[in-house]
Length: 321
Image 1 (tube, rainbow, N blue to C red):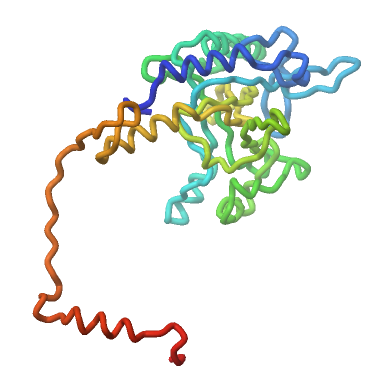
Image 2 (image 1 turned 60 degrees about the vertical axis):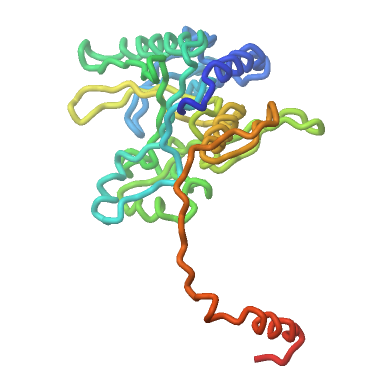
């Protein structure tokens, strides 16, 4: 985002989306808006494959234990999404496998919903903190974008085989690994599991179908878009024998790209002379040097009249060569 992006308009649009979002009745029990979720109904549960503590819902006499998933709506201000650009050196590729992630950063330019979501993440962190020896769980802190609070979420592309079960393994979505590079990169010691999967979607509204969702290529997401990220929370052990709190990305949905599109048009217009669409007057462009181009053939060398006569005698239905 730059000077052409109208942060104030984007913030107003985001606030309107937050106010008009669906009520809890249309959401499943394991998918709630983070800012208004009742975290006291969630519990921290240990899992062995991979070894982690996860924030879960359910688990009572009448409900199965499920990973608690929450929705956050904000402006996309940072990302590292498919398609993946890999280094050319094979050994470098192999070294990066463990650290490759699908990552997003969301901000609300200071709006209340993002601030409240950050407070909820802090509450989830405290729930996890109670499961660990004092001083072993590393502190979590929100991200920052241009002085505004922000939230980062990410998910690894791979899981080490020793930390996965055969039932967890799944194929890469076609839009995530279009050329098969990630599948090839797994080798025999890494797998792609359901825990590594991120769904990419777009919200669509039509007069015929109303509101519905469709899967999209992650390349459609751009900084400045208003999106909805689905996240969950987990704590995993580090190689330093400490534990780290993670905000895991589960899905990303495109809600609105109006201000991003408007900024793209303004950015394009400043590069050339155009007509002011508001007042119908020509806007002067920045003066550019006149580029001279040498004639490859002088007029004396070319008989234009003879060439034109020759062209007039050509026929499309002439003999084949």
